[in-house]
Image 1: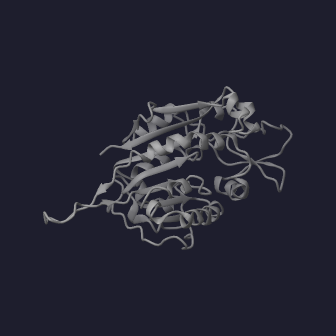
Image 2: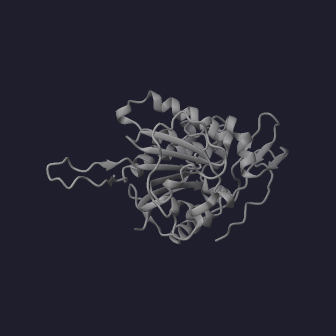
Length: 317
């Protein structure tokens, strides 16, 4: 296993194009304005795969029983709404999909204020338009960086949280995004029913990422992770063309092999779960996906190359 970032390389599409390698937060601050519209092939494939993988993942969630009355004539105990964390939520691309989970508490975490400034109004608008009986109960966002030691707090302490109790307040929609610092959601540590992280771990050392996931989850909780395949990382990495400067901008990226991901996850008690008959989904770009317009013309150069994988884990009890 290696956690050495991918070294600088020229832009693959145009060797003469200037390339800027920036710290991840600086790169995403510039990428935020065009992130959802720049025709990124890997993001498009991720969206396509999640049309089936995300619903199957969410179907694994089982409500957490709440204590009921000891009175035999009392109604049966109710179930606690699930807490779902979108770890590295970015512009809310997948946070928005989680808002369809009835009564759920949805928490979006990201280290980029610029990305969150797009995610927050996007999800507020979607939530407001949905039937209250068939939508998430609350949505909250926080600017939080798992790579910042001052923000890690109990997440990297052995044993996780001391008080795994859901304390997300109702009515969080409309509140401002908190400034970076101590998380306002600290009482949720160790009680998440599900953690979703899509195309995020490319930017994080594996031990840090999976210890964070494991300490956010309750025992028996679920995690969905998707990422760039190492075969793609041999050739390229995350990045975008900045329309303001004309340069290619690349954040810090790691070329994580599937086997290394599984090893790191297993080391913190996360076990692979078969979903729809697959333990680890590995996908290459197929010609028909380009031809049918699902991935865009920019994906043509990746036909036949493994570019994406997805896997679901559960935390040991």
